[in-house]
Length: 291
Figure 1 (cartoon, rainbow, N blue to C red):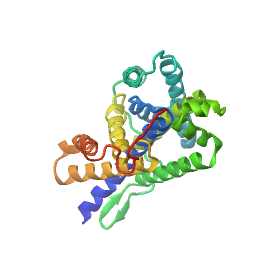
Figure 2 (cartoon, one colour):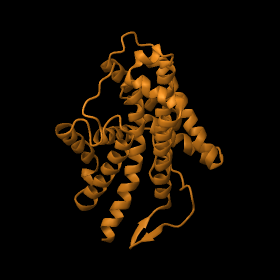
Figure 3 (cartoon, one colour):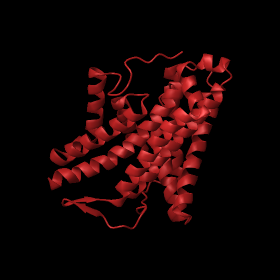
Figure 4 (cartoon, rainbow, N blue to C red):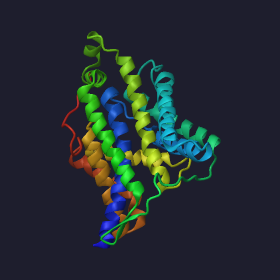
């Protein structure tokens, strides 16, 4: 029981990170229909920026937290303005290739700025680990779960209670009709890129104290976040959370009870399984029509 509980805690922690990354994919897809494969690099930049501002520049934790999110959000804005909006024929395949190229570029720039060495950060709080039925729960895990809960609740309120959120949903349903009603669709796409990049940076910031951060950490995290989004249902916020948690728990159980070599394979096995059995995901709609 103790062993199972320990793996469960580890899975919930990793699953919460995957959920945040998956929310970034979902948010951008809802507004634009685009899958951004540079999302993992936003995670990496969030982690390294946080470490630099907090540990290097000695800024207070809240200031480093929000400045890191703001900086990565600006990178998302630049990606949309300089690389996505300038495409003459925005075919989905072309846009996906552009995001892959952006991922490679951001990874190279991060290597030049932060080097190839791995960096680390302390936990957000100095509280001792909690003992529950013989298993250890890190305080950082509670931080991660709490932040994920706040983000999901905030997104639901944003889409349902604010005019901007409703405008973004209108653009996702029918961009042409939204434009005819006076909704600035280009601004909504720009905002979606900024929010998606900021979401990715939050995932990186949260994971920085529990893992070593380096310039090449984003690729695998981005792919797992994409797997989580597909597992839960691309386009569903709650689906992203469910998919991330499920992926994290199954990954931890496979590593604990079978072999650590299965850690990365689990995500892609689940992706293939969900594409075969239910392409729309666990909580996704059966068909998505874009206009």
